[in-house]
Length: 271
Image (cartoon, rainbow, N blue to C red; front, side, top):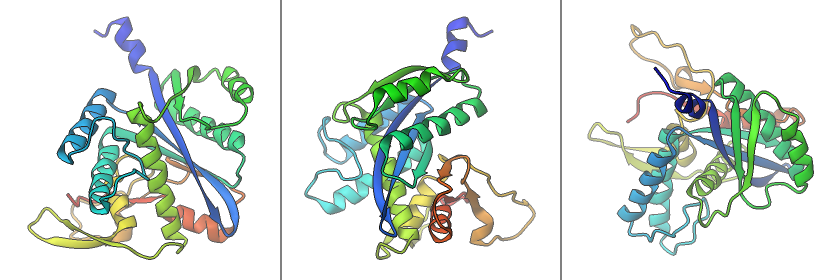
């Protein structure tokens, strides 16, 4: 029988938020990434092990734009840590057709709230990077008005000492890359990797990210018939718009199509 303390822990959700921005057809927009740990101790230990494996110091910041002169090492590090995100976190992405950080953060709060309700979490602790919004009073007012869930913490963290905030930065940068790729704003980049069956395959970097994050972004997964001999790539895609990824309805048809493409993840057994 669960004790009261254990039951309380299970009803509390910690959420770590960071943001990035980009221009879509000349207009600025904001992407807020929220990562929710399944086991924060295991995640932090895994990051520490990755740093040791790559010969990095304990204070090295693992972010999308990590500062290191070795480009090949940064690419390997990024791939390993994005895979870690897929294993240890649930990721939510909120895309806003505006440069107004208060508006974007409020939309992120709404996204996190709906996820917490689905997961039956009564209490939410929100942690964010510096400069995540402009008006603290406006944000606090919105949180105070929420009864389901109840927000019990609004904390600003310094990414230099917060591994979860570094990972939230990496999540935001990863999704930004996927959006830009879907828009055709980046040249295709191919990466080679071991397919786990004694061979090497080449995939686009954006597609590889879809594989690494395939379990971490909630959405509607495909219904697969175990008796069917084979499937097309489209049959194995999880569509995450509306649940794991919330897209502002002010985007036009072209932009929405690209964002929906970026919000579709591969769920097959690649490795």
